[in-house]
Image 1 (tube, rainbow, N blue to C red):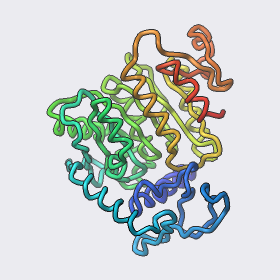
Image 2: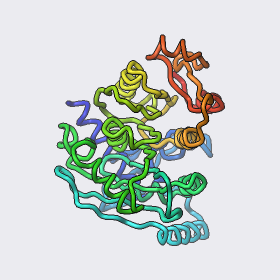
Image 3: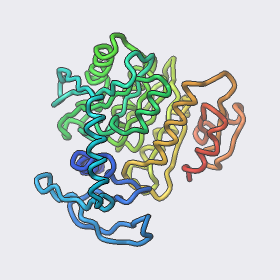
Length: 342
């Protein structure tokens, strides 16, 4: 329980950065902003190749952050202009919260009105997915693959979440809310792709376990604790990922191995020298993985050894399930090996 409490508070701190400053400033091992917290700290600046102190979020009322790369007035003007223009394309759909939920909103990008599937982006604990669907890279991906694009914004009391209640647990009401919201937005129930980060990974993994027939593909990145997976008639392909500096790493790896023991077509991604934070390199890979699933043709998939980072035959994968994973396209092997270090 102590670990779950620490994990929940870390998730909240992690999400606070995005609420105040936007997704750009989420802690990310590949960027300039690497840690969330309430004190000043030292961070490594990739562009200047040196360590320096950065002011961090101290309290919501103070709203202090070092805008390290936004000192140019023209750049700020163009950024604000871009945000205002894209805001016209985002619609908020408010739903009646289920039991043990504080609010339930969905943010919808209106770039593609009649999709055959929807991509749902699920942020950290009690966070808003609005910022995620504002990102042009996700909008371009959705448009290219003719997907709806939805940002989840569900919330519950953290003590409930740590005790098996609230929106993390899709079978207890939040999953139905998402499905009802999708039907309300698009006029029918359509298949889903889900990408969940931190608290969003909790919801994503449990939604897939609850309604696997509704899911095309998914990725759960860095949940603090997991429910043991169950066997199902349909097992949609998915990614379980975690940074190797993240205390959630062990629980995430165990969950992956449990799923593979049941024969699920899952992939393990171990991000090197990465703590708890957004990962641009993982998101790039997730988009390629989702694209491969959407475009899948018989015979294109490939089994890999997640310890040795090499391709293996289906027979070997079946004999050694706990150390093997599945790629929907053999051409993803190089991309996967670039970001995965066991």
